[in-house]
Length: 588
Image (cartoon, rainbow, N blue to C red; front, top):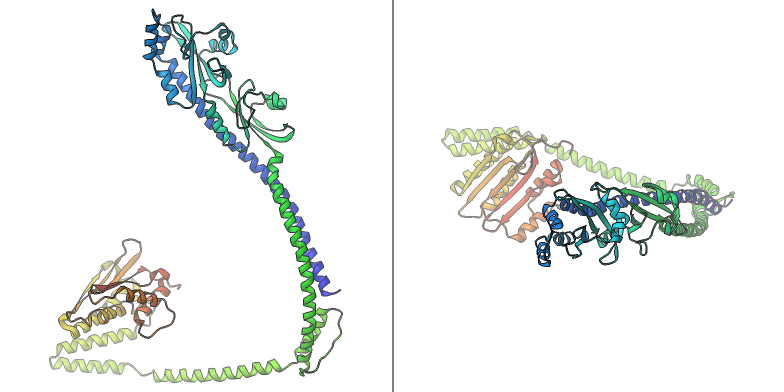
């Protein structure tokens, strides 16, 4: 079997079959996920509609409660009026109904039916007609003991249907009663449902649809839209049923208003076809892409395998030439397939010495270079093995001679210089205490003060609480040296250097160290160039190597955010600041 045939078959079995299995599995999972998401979203939507609808109808209940306990309303409704003027005056003195309608957008109108022949019908206070008294809602209100009931009923004033609160109001002082009707705003209910993605309805106790987000549903009954009788009778739950000829999922949630004789229901309906429409489109698109990709992949595998086999044949001839040691002679070896032929030719290639010769030459050259470098390093090490103690002894002799001759300043400077050199030689340890580093800085400053006399002043502000913090050696001294040389040396008036070390105000367990001078300073362009040079990997002539060395050591030891921060202004001075943790990071 040819290699290209093996590659095509292996691709089909290794890639094509698993893709089909995974595709079938993911298709089922995607459909289940879409259905589960729809169910969860429907439940959440129904709960949201229930909550918002409850808030709207509770406004009507609160108003009815206030009016049932309003003594002014009782007086108005039961007073015997002698003239129309008295009635009109009484209506003007009781503007509460108009105020309720104006203030609360959740209601559209309020009317009170009372048996008082002296009152005028002003669409707020009405005399009940015989038809009104005979109506079922009016009779149930009279026998409801003050409980509220909710009906989808027509308002006789504008002949429109509203979800209305109906409640009997007892006037205890006068031993009379009235029937209060408050219309809930249909626009408010429609606005709540209009935001829902699925068909959602609010249904009263008579299975009348009082609000819906689908046109043509309001005012219909559940039976008129071919709902299953089980669904019509159900108070709550989740059901599968045919709605308008489509297999659908119906979610029912009861809404029981406070102190109510009856309840409402929130019904949400979604069609399985609508839910699966988008997943099915994605599945078809994905299947098309997969099939096209597999077809293209098979053609590419076949083409690449043919190209590969030809290349391997050519490569085998070159390997055979290398294996014989004569690149001008071709050696042919029979084989059943390309891989077997290539493996036998590779075995013959082991005998080739061309590569070995080149490798041996390179190895010998590297050994010579390595030996030369080792000899050079040994020479430098031997040259550097001069004992530095003779230098300390010489400095001590000079210091004693100066002391004996009364040159106390020279003696003190020589002592400080010897102390600095000894500390520099001992700086091979990983960290030193901050007070030892400050001691080295003090020696350096005293030497420079001997040199500059009154032209140079310095100040050490070291917090006692940070003196025993471990710090890298020779970190502060180069900064001080830089401040003296570049900041004060060229100024005739001299200047001052201030070294500050204290716990950080902004971050816990850190210390802030600053070296500041009031010397020449730098213009902005030079400062920007200096800041850029701190992170350069190679040293350049003219750049401040000491600052760059300190900056890189701080970042390597304490982290990338612990490098130097330099601020300077020409003619004002320069400050170099860095912040390090209280304890060194020994893992760096």
